[in-house]
Structure formats: structure tokens, C-alpha cells
Image (cartoon, rainbow, N blue to C red; front, side):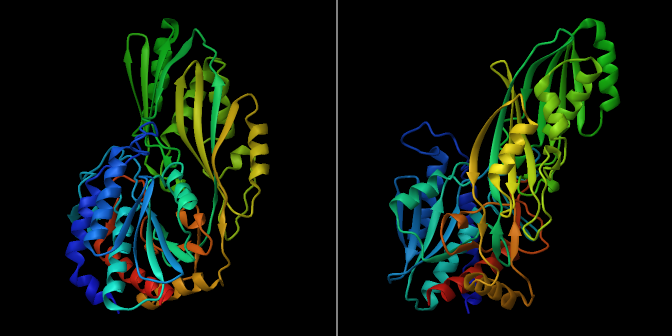
Length: 458
């Protein structure tokens, strides 16, 4: 019903996506009272609202914490909820991360998949519905600005604005998501006891976010001159495409590199911090360096992504297994600190997992953050079935709803689930270097979103 109209306007849609990709809308902190999430994020909101106004919609900037774009009349509100903030670009891009690049069948740029591309597709889907049909409910695109961090934006919206009656989030996978794992972030801090043989001077993982599998970690060590040659020989044996070192006088600078990925799918990445922890632990053991934090992390976490090395049993249920991402490692204020992100299936008890972590990491100070309960809506729910049907009828496939490890704004509202925009079989490029969405997939998502909006609002 809507495809012809969307294709006729696809050039304008891609142009507007390019305007959004240009803005590096990464969190810049919470300290500026004028800009809750930083000037760049504020610029992204204003630009998106400007595009919405150009397309003929009602718009509202909600105290710079969030916003919405709306059309239609009626008591009931259909919500589409997504975000414009992005994670840092990371290193190793072939294409400019903050410039939309079209190469063959792909659109490259930070946010093309997560979540600016799907948000633009949702906006143009609303335009297609508004121009070609009559609906009897209001349709509102809710614009989040802090999804990649603390969700302050959506919590602010819920305090000040109307909740949707029904809706979806374009921030995950097709055909439809019926379950999302719970989230738990754990920060550890252990006192560093200096040893004369090998001293830690610096640790850096380039401010990696806890929801990103770290691509880089470096450590500077000061080594006693008596064992310099032995340490050098040890490191030479470890040199690989993932491990490198340089020596200046009695200091060794070690780097580990991995593959960046979303913490919801740690198996798609390669963890540079875990690699460093294992390397340091082996070196410290060789010279009887008693560094408790590194030893415990290496012993209990290792490189596994399923949490079993913490003593946490995970069930291979339809909801998926528990995953763990050791994302951060720091040396500051005389302490070794780490940050890790757990994704927990809804059939597991978070409090029991906390108790297990406290037991297994005894001797290290723990702080919990970012706890977010799981989302679960039965597969036979009317909304889940309707969205799956829309996808299957559009593609000719016969797909069942999915359970995922990611957390989307769908869990912020009742009767809301995630719907696209990643198609089955396509790689999840969220948080990855050279993030892209296929041109055809963006158009297809727009068409399916238009159908969903019409079906929910007619």
C-alpha cells in the first residue's frame, strides 16, 4: 500500500539520514545544565524535529531531554520509540563515521543501524501513512537521547508526557521481539599493592563503554632491571596479531587489540580487556606478583561470554543464555577498577546472580548500576502476532518472534515490543566499526513500519 510512495521519496529520506549522521551525537556528560547530554546530542534532537516539521508533523522539544513528532487525532496513542544518541565511533573505520557513505548496496555511518536509520525510516513511514490513509488515533514518534547510557531521556518522558497505548521500537530485529534480557552492570575496585619486581603504572581502554566489547587495552609496566630480559622474552613469545609491546628503558608498554561488538552479542567480538587480564595474570604468576584484582578477574571471568566462570549456571532456554562482557579496566587512585555488563535471561533471578558474584569476587569492592528488568510478552500476544504477520506477508517468509540479549526502549512502556530493523541473517552492526545498513533493508523497514503504523492506528 505504501511502497510506491516511499520509493518516490527515498532520495529525500536518504538526504535527511545524511544530515543526521553528520552530527556526532555521543554523550558528552551530564554537567552542562543547558544541554542534559551535551551540545551535539541537542543538535541531533533539533535537526530531527526540524525534519519532522518540514514533513508537516506536530513537534515538541521536551526540555532538551527528549522530544516527539506526531500526527493524527483521537484519544489513543500509538507510539514508536527510538533514539538519536550513538556510541563512540571507535578506531579502524574504512569510511568516515560521521558522514553518510553509500557504497554499492550499503549505507555506512555511525547510527545507520542504531538507531538513526530506523528512526528516519519510521518518520517517513509516518509520512506515508499520513499522506495516503486516514487513521483514528494519534501516532507519535518518541525521540530518546540517552539510550546508550542511563535512559534519563525516556525516564524524563515518562514523568512529563503521555504513555503510548500500544507501540513498537525500531531498534532491534525483524520479525519481532517478544523477550529481552535483563541488564546488570557491575563495577569492581580493588586496592593495588605495589610489588618491586613488576609495577603497574598505567591502564587504558580508551573509555570503552560497558555495553561495547572492547577493541583496545594498553598497560604500562615498570620492571625491575634484574628480570627485564626475562620479561622481554616472555612477551616476545606472546606477540601475535592481538598482542604487541614496546620497551623503553625499564618500562614495557603492552597493547592488546580485539574486535568491537555490541555487549548483547559478545560472541561476535573479541575482547581486548579479557586478553590483557589473562596476559597480566600469567606474567604476575610467573614472578609471584600478588595482585589480587587481576588474579580474581582472570580466575573467575576468563574470556568466556556465558558467565559460567563466575559460578553462574545459565539455562539454554528459548530466552538464551547469560552473557558477560568485561568492558573496562582502569588504574586510578591506587586501585585496579573494572566494569562488566551482564545480560540475563528473564527466567533467572538477578538477586541470586548478585549473591553469586559477591561470593566469587570476594575481596573486591563491588558496585551495581544500570539494573534493568527483562521484558517478556507471550508469543501469542496480539501485538506480537500482528507485527510478525506484517513482516511475513511483506517478505513471503514464515518467521517466529525472537528473544534477544539487547535492551530497547520497548521495555519502557506496556504493550510495546521491538520491530526491526535488522533482517534475519544480516549481521548486527550495532556498535561496530564500519556500521552500515543495506539500502534495500532501510526501504523495506520503512514500508513495514508504515503498514504497522496503519494497522495499529486505523
